[in-house]
Image (cartoon, rainbow, N blue to C red; front, top):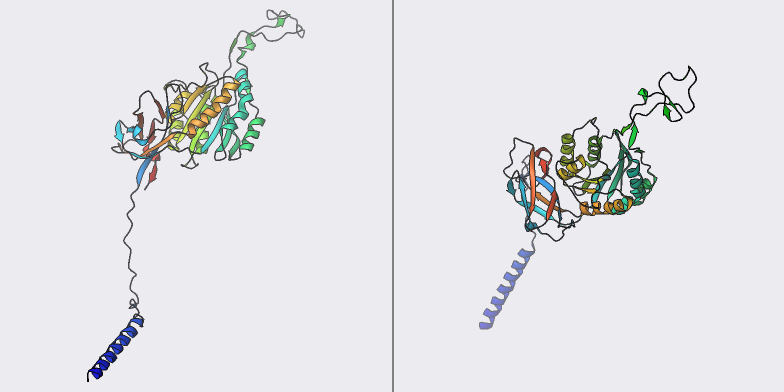
Length: 370
């Protein structure tokens, strides 16, 4: 009897186990189909917050005018309209350059000769990741070559470029002079009709300085317009070689040109070929010449040199400085929305260091990030 009961129990267990296994192997019933005409389930909308971002390239130098590396985010303070701002991002990485080499094509003969001999050295300051255009200007800007990453092409174009020049003095007014005979001025009417003296000609009544017609504002405006469409992931600069002379007959004013530069994040690096100051000394002086004002207000720099070897050294200094700036960004807080222009001041907490950065930004032109 006991054996019979045990066998019956084992049979029951086997049957239950087999039934359970069969149930687990059966496919799951298909999901119920959505009724025809029912709208698919909508995902909740993404909330995207866009905030204006001001990009500020910053150059820091020590008392000897050398670039200072190794600074960190906490070494800087940013003020806009005298209100301290929170630094959103910070970078000390080198940037590739987008540059317009802008050359005064109406220099005095001596300065033009020195610049002419130094031109090919400009290409040495640029690398394979940099794009460069060359423009000359006098009354109007003239594009010699458009943007290119080809450094060999840049070298060739600069080597072939022939700069114009002028004498530093000209005759004052030859129409009021009498005839000249043997180097002596004769009174009018001293010679008979149709009998001019040998070597006669208009007398030069003194000399005056050559009056240039170079339109500096228009040239910088045109160069800035070329750079406007270049990417914000590049450092955009105007590499200006000039004596700083400017005519009164510009289409654009200084303020209009500066507005265009700041709106496009373009900095001007000026090399003046006339001012006799220590080689390579940076004197970004607000309120001085137009060269210095453009550089100071756009966050660039100004240098002075007049001889070929000094010019060649400065060319590499300019590109090195532009490439190795610190980059700070901030989202303006407490900005007065009724005005478009806002000031910027960058301070460094370490002592005895100087800072070059743009003077301000335009609310209508700043980039927008997420």
